[in-house]
Length: 342
Image 1 (cartoon, one colour):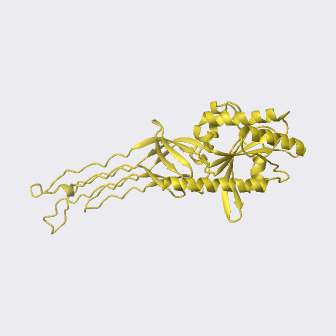
Image 2 (spheres, helix red, strand yellow; image 1 turned 90 degrees about the horizontal axis):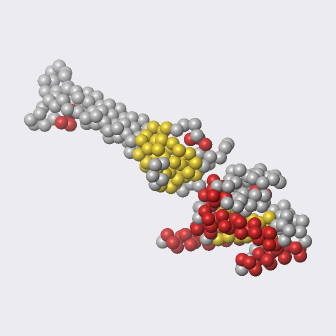
Image 3 (cartoon, one colour; image 1 turned 180 degrees about the vertical axis):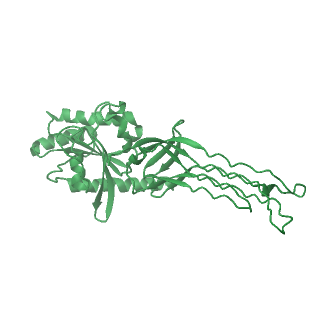
């Protein structure tokens, strides 16, 4: 199934049914009087997060979603049927915005979380409601209220605990396939990954979700390469694993330049991304000597003033250690969020 993460649709609530003007006319009932019933309310429009959905592709073909109208009232004080509410199911992580003002109307981050976007039109009143001591035979009734319509933009931001970032061919897809059940496309050319991949990483009885973000390049924040299309998916993550491919670099300076390119793009896109906790991994070290690996690691650690992890997803070197570090950052972030929300 094709991954779709942005779409624009129009939603419409149902019209209210009209009230009825009617009089009771039956044999042997001389004082029947007005008996027109009320119209039913139109259906409202809700959005609901559903973990069974993982893309917005279902909205590509259909552009207008309308809730049913309410039924008209009838004689004998019969009320019109209520229009059934329209519940539009979207993937967890979907943001609903007003297409005209860009105002966020709903941010659905939890399974079965529901948000009311449009209320249905109220049903009209039948003439039974207008009977008074001085007006025994009112003919007045009211029409139902017209429902409202709204053009909205749906944007899906993947909900992952950790994002794998780096230049194209940095080894992100290979890593996520080795630590989870995800099976992304892997090849030896740039932009193999054209869609984000999610994988669940288990460590004992604990688990967390990792997103493989398609490779970024210089000026990605300005739309180059795959551009900002996937940078937004990093927003919700708790931390980053930054992969730097050192296998083809002439020296440690060139390798560090790769790192700086991605850091600059993250910062230009959002200050929030720049402040996320980060684990730096030097990848594809299989063909390097231990002396070369140590030289690259030492240079990075001197520049960053923190530990850097040499990593091989093929041989498995330090993969288990990385999983432990990832889990640790997730748990630390969860504790911080809990404290901030208290």
